[in-house]
Length: 308
Figure 1: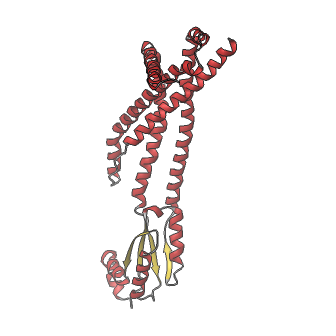
Figure 2 (figure 1 turned 180 degrees about the vertical axis):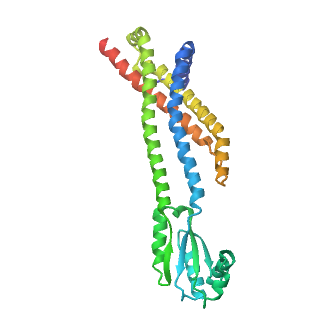
Protein backbone atom coordinates (compact mmCIF):
# COMPACT_ATOMS: atom_id res chain seq x y z
CA UNK A 1 0.00 0.00 0.00
CA UNK A 2 1.36 3.41 -0.97
CA UNK A 3 1.93 5.77 1.96
CA UNK A 4 0.33 9.25 1.85
CA UNK A 5 3.75 10.85 1.62
CA UNK A 6 4.72 8.76 -1.41
CA UNK A 7 1.33 9.40 -3.00
CA UNK A 8 1.62 13.17 -2.72
CA UNK A 9 5.28 13.20 -3.74
CA UNK A 10 4.46 11.33 -6.96
CA UNK A 11 1.69 13.80 -7.77
CA UNK A 12 3.96 16.73 -6.97
CA UNK A 13 6.64 15.26 -9.22
CA UNK A 14 4.11 14.80 -12.02
CA UNK A 15 2.88 18.38 -11.58
CA UNK A 16 6.39 19.82 -11.72
CA UNK A 17 7.18 17.65 -14.74
CA UNK A 18 4.07 18.96 -16.51
CA UNK A 19 4.98 22.56 -15.70
CA UNK A 20 8.50 22.01 -16.96
CA UNK A 21 7.37 20.59 -20.30
CA UNK A 22 4.89 23.42 -20.85
CA UNK A 23 7.49 26.07 -20.00
CA UNK A 24 9.92 24.54 -22.48
CA UNK A 25 7.28 25.04 -25.21
CA UNK A 26 6.12 28.60 -24.47
CA UNK A 27 4.63 29.38 -27.88
CA UNK A 28 2.53 26.22 -28.12
CA UNK A 29 1.45 26.55 -24.48
CA UNK A 30 0.39 30.18 -24.88
CA UNK A 31 -1.51 29.44 -28.09
CA UNK A 32 -3.40 26.58 -26.46
CA UNK A 33 -4.25 28.71 -23.42
CA UNK A 34 -5.35 31.54 -25.72
CA UNK A 35 -7.68 29.27 -27.69
CA UNK A 36 -9.17 27.88 -24.47
CA UNK A 37 -9.61 31.41 -23.09
CA UNK A 38 -11.52 32.53 -26.20
CA UNK A 39 -13.66 29.38 -26.15
CA UNK A 40 -14.58 30.02 -22.50
CA UNK A 41 -14.95 33.79 -22.87
CA UNK A 42 -17.57 33.58 -25.64
CA UNK A 43 -20.27 31.76 -23.63
CA UNK A 44 -19.32 33.77 -20.55
CA UNK A 45 -19.90 36.99 -22.47
CA UNK A 46 -23.26 35.70 -23.68
CA UNK A 47 -24.12 34.78 -20.10
CA UNK A 48 -23.40 38.35 -19.05
CA UNK A 49 -25.59 39.61 -21.88
CA UNK A 50 -28.44 37.44 -20.60
CA UNK A 51 -27.86 38.50 -17.00
CA UNK A 52 -27.72 42.20 -17.80
CA UNK A 53 -30.75 41.89 -20.06
CA UNK A 54 -32.67 40.30 -17.21
CA UNK A 55 -31.59 43.08 -14.88
CA UNK A 56 -32.66 45.69 -17.42
CA UNK A 57 -35.90 43.80 -18.00
CA UNK A 58 -36.50 43.82 -14.26
CA UNK A 59 -36.30 47.61 -14.31
CA UNK A 60 -38.71 47.70 -17.23
CA UNK A 61 -41.18 45.23 -15.74
CA UNK A 62 -41.41 47.42 -12.66
CA UNK A 63 -43.53 49.70 -14.86
CA UNK A 64 -46.06 46.95 -15.72
CA UNK A 65 -49.48 47.92 -14.46
CA UNK A 66 -53.12 47.07 -14.97
CA UNK A 67 -55.86 49.70 -15.01
CA UNK A 68 -59.14 48.47 -13.54
CA UNK A 69 -62.15 50.65 -14.40
CA UNK A 70 -65.18 50.17 -12.19
CA UNK A 71 -68.74 50.68 -13.32
CA UNK A 72 -69.94 54.25 -12.86
CA UNK A 73 -72.54 53.26 -10.27
CA UNK A 74 -69.99 51.65 -7.92
CA UNK A 75 -69.70 53.80 -4.75
CA UNK A 76 -66.36 54.93 -3.43
CA UNK A 77 -66.68 52.78 -0.28
CA UNK A 78 -67.07 49.65 -2.39
CA UNK A 79 -64.08 50.66 -4.54
CA UNK A 80 -61.99 51.06 -1.38
CA UNK A 81 -63.06 47.60 -0.17
CA UNK A 82 -62.07 46.06 -3.49
CA UNK A 83 -58.78 47.93 -3.41
CA UNK A 84 -58.03 46.39 -0.01
CA UNK A 85 -58.99 42.95 -1.38
CA UNK A 86 -56.64 43.42 -4.36
CA UNK A 87 -53.75 44.17 -1.99
CA UNK A 88 -54.28 40.79 -0.34
CA UNK A 89 -54.06 38.94 -3.66
CA UNK A 90 -50.82 36.92 -4.09
CA UNK A 91 -48.69 38.42 -6.85
CA UNK A 92 -49.89 41.98 -6.30
CA UNK A 93 -47.12 44.41 -5.47
CA UNK A 94 -48.76 47.84 -5.34
CA UNK A 95 -52.37 49.03 -5.63
CA UNK A 96 -53.42 52.66 -6.05
CA UNK A 97 -57.02 53.86 -5.97
CA UNK A 98 -57.94 56.89 -8.08
CA UNK A 99 -61.38 58.13 -7.02
CA UNK A 100 -63.63 59.46 -9.78
CA UNK A 101 -63.66 62.97 -8.29
CA UNK A 102 -59.85 63.10 -8.25
CA UNK A 103 -59.70 61.81 -11.82
CA UNK A 104 -62.21 64.46 -12.96
CA UNK A 105 -60.31 67.22 -11.20
CA UNK A 106 -57.03 66.13 -12.77
CA UNK A 107 -58.65 65.94 -16.19
CA UNK A 108 -60.11 69.40 -15.69
CA UNK A 109 -56.71 70.78 -14.71
CA UNK A 110 -54.71 69.39 -17.62
CA UNK A 111 -57.19 68.99 -20.46
CA UNK A 112 -58.27 72.60 -20.91
CA UNK A 113 -61.94 71.58 -21.10
CA UNK A 114 -62.95 73.01 -17.74
CA UNK A 115 -65.92 74.99 -19.10
CA UNK A 116 -67.24 71.98 -21.00
CA UNK A 117 -66.95 69.77 -17.93
CA UNK A 118 -68.91 72.32 -15.88
CA UNK A 119 -71.82 71.84 -18.25
CA UNK A 120 -71.97 68.11 -17.46
CA UNK A 121 -74.42 66.82 -14.93
CA UNK A 122 -72.57 64.64 -12.49
CA UNK A 123 -69.22 62.87 -12.94
CA UNK A 124 -69.00 60.60 -15.99
CA UNK A 125 -65.69 59.08 -14.87
CA UNK A 126 -65.52 55.82 -12.88
CA UNK A 127 -63.30 54.94 -9.96
CA UNK A 128 -60.03 53.36 -11.12
CA UNK A 129 -57.41 51.29 -9.38
CA UNK A 130 -53.90 50.84 -10.73
CA UNK A 131 -52.39 47.45 -9.93
CA UNK A 132 -48.68 46.71 -10.29
CA UNK A 133 -47.73 43.02 -10.11
CA UNK A 134 -45.03 41.80 -7.80
CA UNK A 135 -41.65 41.27 -9.46
CA UNK A 136 -42.05 37.48 -9.43
CA UNK A 137 -45.38 37.81 -11.27
CA UNK A 138 -44.29 40.45 -13.78
CA UNK A 139 -44.47 37.98 -16.63
CA UNK A 140 -47.14 37.10 -19.21
CA UNK A 141 -48.52 34.15 -17.21
CA UNK A 142 -48.65 36.01 -13.90
CA UNK A 143 -50.19 39.15 -15.41
CA UNK A 144 -52.82 37.18 -17.34
CA UNK A 145 -53.79 35.29 -14.19
CA UNK A 146 -54.13 38.56 -12.30
CA UNK A 147 -56.12 40.10 -15.13
CA UNK A 148 -58.59 37.19 -15.14
CA UNK A 149 -59.02 37.50 -11.39
CA UNK A 150 -59.75 41.22 -11.54
CA UNK A 151 -61.99 40.94 -14.59
CA UNK A 152 -64.20 38.46 -12.72
CA UNK A 153 -65.31 41.12 -10.23
CA UNK A 154 -68.93 42.08 -11.02
CA UNK A 155 -68.18 45.72 -10.18
CA UNK A 156 -65.46 45.94 -12.87
CA UNK A 157 -66.32 47.35 -16.27
CA UNK A 158 -62.99 46.63 -17.96
CA UNK A 159 -59.34 45.84 -17.28
CA UNK A 160 -56.74 47.38 -19.54
CA UNK A 161 -53.27 45.98 -20.04
CA UNK A 162 -51.00 45.97 -23.06
CA UNK A 163 -49.10 42.73 -22.52
CA UNK A 164 -47.70 42.17 -26.01
CA UNK A 165 -44.37 43.82 -25.26
CA UNK A 166 -44.02 41.74 -22.09
CA UNK A 167 -44.49 38.55 -24.11
CA UNK A 168 -41.92 39.70 -26.66
CA UNK A 169 -39.40 40.61 -23.97
CA UNK A 170 -39.86 37.26 -22.24
CA UNK A 171 -39.46 35.43 -25.56
CA UNK A 172 -36.22 37.31 -26.29
CA UNK A 173 -34.79 36.44 -22.87
CA UNK A 174 -35.77 32.79 -23.29
CA UNK A 175 -34.07 32.77 -26.70
CA UNK A 176 -30.89 34.25 -25.25
CA UNK A 177 -30.83 31.62 -22.50
CA UNK A 178 -31.19 28.84 -25.06
CA UNK A 179 -28.45 30.34 -27.23
CA UNK A 180 -26.20 30.54 -24.17
CA UNK A 181 -26.79 26.85 -23.43
CA UNK A 182 -25.96 25.87 -27.02
CA UNK A 183 -22.83 28.03 -27.06
CA UNK A 184 -21.68 26.62 -23.73
CA UNK A 185 -22.04 23.02 -24.91
CA UNK A 186 -20.47 23.57 -28.34
CA UNK A 187 -17.51 25.57 -27.05
CA UNK A 188 -17.08 23.18 -24.11
CA UNK A 189 -16.66 20.37 -26.63
CA UNK A 190 -14.21 22.63 -28.45
CA UNK A 191 -12.12 22.98 -25.29
CA UNK A 192 -12.08 19.19 -24.90
CA UNK A 193 -10.89 18.86 -28.48
CA UNK A 194 -8.17 21.50 -28.09
CA UNK A 195 -6.76 20.03 -24.89
CA UNK A 196 -7.10 16.46 -26.15
CA UNK A 197 -5.25 17.30 -29.35
CA UNK A 198 -2.46 19.04 -27.44
CA UNK A 199 -2.07 16.04 -25.16
CA UNK A 200 -2.09 13.59 -28.09
CA UNK A 201 0.71 15.53 -29.76
CA UNK A 202 2.69 15.45 -26.51
CA UNK A 203 2.17 11.72 -26.10
CA UNK A 204 3.22 11.01 -29.68
CA UNK A 205 6.38 13.03 -29.14
CA UNK A 206 7.15 10.95 -26.02
CA UNK A 207 6.03 7.59 -27.36
CA UNK A 208 9.41 5.92 -26.89
CA UNK A 209 9.58 7.11 -23.28
CA UNK A 210 6.06 5.79 -22.61
CA UNK A 211 6.89 2.39 -24.13
CA UNK A 212 9.96 2.08 -21.92
CA UNK A 213 7.92 3.06 -18.86
CA UNK A 214 5.34 0.41 -19.69
CA UNK A 215 8.08 -2.22 -20.13
CA UNK A 216 9.48 -1.60 -16.65
CA UNK A 217 6.01 -1.94 -15.07
CA UNK A 218 4.58 1.55 -15.25
CA UNK A 219 0.79 1.54 -14.99
CA UNK A 220 -1.55 3.47 -17.24
CA UNK A 221 -2.41 5.75 -14.29
CA UNK A 222 1.27 6.52 -13.79
CA UNK A 223 1.75 7.28 -17.49
CA UNK A 224 -1.41 9.41 -17.65
CA UNK A 225 -0.74 11.43 -14.52
CA UNK A 226 1.58 14.14 -15.93
CA UNK A 227 -0.65 14.61 -18.96
CA UNK A 228 -3.68 15.06 -16.72
CA UNK A 229 -1.80 17.77 -14.85
CA UNK A 230 -1.02 19.42 -18.18
CA UNK A 231 -4.74 19.43 -18.92
CA UNK A 232 -5.45 21.00 -15.53
CA UNK A 233 -2.84 23.68 -16.17
CA UNK A 234 -4.23 24.42 -19.62
CA UNK A 235 -7.77 24.70 -18.25
CA UNK A 236 -6.79 26.66 -15.17
CA UNK A 237 -4.81 29.31 -17.04
CA UNK A 238 -7.33 29.31 -19.88
CA UNK A 239 -10.16 29.97 -17.42
CA UNK A 240 -8.19 32.71 -15.67
CA UNK A 241 -7.39 34.30 -19.04
CA UNK A 242 -11.09 34.09 -19.98
CA UNK A 243 -12.00 35.95 -16.78
CA UNK A 244 -9.50 38.65 -17.72
CA UNK A 245 -10.82 38.93 -21.28
CA UNK A 246 -14.44 39.18 -20.13
CA UNK A 247 -13.56 41.70 -17.41
CA UNK A 248 -11.70 43.90 -19.89
CA UNK A 249 -14.63 43.72 -22.32
CA UNK A 250 -17.10 44.73 -19.60
CA UNK A 251 -14.85 47.55 -18.40
CA UNK A 252 -14.63 48.95 -21.92
CA UNK A 253 -18.44 48.92 -22.28
CA UNK A 254 -19.49 50.35 -18.91
CA UNK A 255 -19.20 54.00 -19.97
CA UNK A 256 -20.89 53.64 -23.42
CA UNK A 257 -23.75 51.64 -21.95
CA UNK A 258 -24.18 54.21 -19.19
CA UNK A 259 -24.36 57.02 -21.75
CA UNK A 260 -26.89 55.08 -23.81
CA UNK A 261 -29.06 54.46 -20.75
CA UNK A 262 -28.88 58.15 -19.84
CA UNK A 263 -30.22 59.08 -23.28
CA UNK A 264 -33.35 57.07 -22.48
CA UNK A 265 -33.66 58.56 -19.01
CA UNK A 266 -32.36 55.51 -17.18
CA UNK A 267 -29.45 54.67 -14.89
CA UNK A 268 -28.33 51.25 -15.98
CA UNK A 269 -24.91 50.02 -14.85
CA UNK A 270 -23.40 47.10 -16.74
CA UNK A 271 -22.69 44.14 -14.46
CA UNK A 272 -19.58 42.02 -14.88
CA UNK A 273 -18.58 38.63 -13.53
CA UNK A 274 -19.14 38.18 -9.83
CA UNK A 275 -16.39 36.45 -7.79
CA UNK A 276 -18.36 33.20 -7.63
CA UNK A 277 -19.00 33.28 -11.39
CA UNK A 278 -15.30 33.87 -12.03
CA UNK A 279 -14.40 30.90 -9.81
CA UNK A 280 -16.94 28.72 -11.61
CA UNK A 281 -15.41 29.73 -14.94
CA UNK A 282 -11.88 28.89 -13.78
CA UNK A 283 -12.99 25.63 -12.17
CA UNK A 284 -14.99 24.73 -15.28
CA UNK A 285 -11.94 25.37 -17.44
CA UNK A 286 -9.82 23.12 -15.21
CA UNK A 287 -12.46 20.39 -15.31
CA UNK A 288 -12.70 20.55 -19.10
CA UNK A 289 -8.92 20.54 -19.31
CA UNK A 290 -8.45 17.41 -17.22
CA UNK A 291 -11.34 15.66 -19.00
CA UNK A 292 -9.91 16.49 -22.42
CA UNK A 293 -6.48 15.34 -21.32
CA UNK A 294 -7.87 12.07 -19.96
CA UNK A 295 -9.76 11.36 -23.17
CA UNK A 296 -6.77 12.14 -25.36
CA UNK A 297 -4.29 10.26 -23.21
CA UNK A 298 -6.43 7.19 -22.64
CA UNK A 299 -7.14 6.72 -26.32
CA UNK A 300 -3.55 7.12 -27.48
CA UNK A 301 -2.08 5.03 -24.66
CA UNK A 302 -4.49 2.25 -25.57
CA UNK A 303 -3.24 2.43 -29.18
CA UNK A 304 0.38 2.27 -28.02
CA UNK A 305 -0.41 -0.82 -25.94
CA UNK A 306 -2.20 -2.46 -28.86
CA UNK A 307 0.75 -1.90 -31.17
CA UNK A 308 3.26 -2.93 -28.54
